[in-house]
Amino acid sequence: MKIKANHIAVILIGLALVGFILNSQVQHYQGGEIYESANHAYGLLVRGFNVTIIVKTVDGKTIEGNLLSVRGSTISIVVNGTTYTVGGPEATREDIKAKLIRIVYHGKVYLYGVDPMEGKGSEVFSKLLPDQYYSVRYSGKIYIGDGITPIEIGKLKYMADYKTYGSITINHLGPNGAIITANMVPVQYLIKYLGNYTVYTYGLLYVNSDERNLPLKLVEVRGP
Image (cartoon, rainbow, N blue to C red; front, top):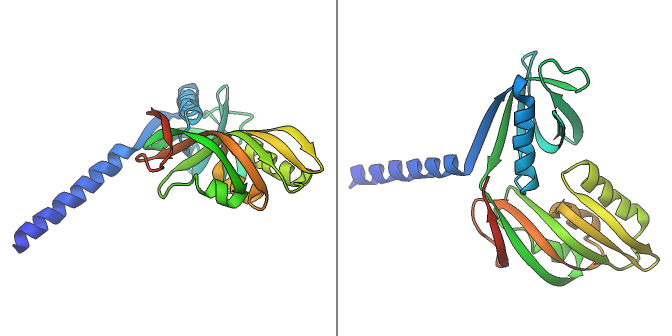
């Protein structure tokens, strides 16, 4: 019985490793293939994947950050809150000269429809976070009450526009509240900056995870 139990344990560990490998994917590019790596990474990002870029520089350093944007052959990543640009091994304007670029992503992207929700921002947006995820982004109209100030809206817009792949459009801002449009904004930002205000919202939710794990209407499942 002990031998069988050990065999079962080995099988379970093996299956777990296989599952991890299937849900975790890594693509390698040489620094000279900067255009190819940039296009591949950006294609994943716009589909809703959380993309990690690992760069081995020409001087032997290893730098890891979250993909922010791509412009031409320049890749922008965020490392501990600071944005850096990555170019090829002969780059002159970018911050980092890459010898090797690894693009890391996981799972699939589950696109859900979000019906109208109203309440305290912290409670409303927390309902959109599943137990397991790599990233959760929200696109939709958000009506905000309680006299939110331009400064609070500005902080949210700055984080969405400059520290992640996403954007905030301010449609209206008055003494009693505001109307904004979120485009693939991390839900954590909405909780942080709109958590103390009353909100009414509806839209689409992009969840990058290993499986479907929210009781919302599933609109689409996206692979790499």
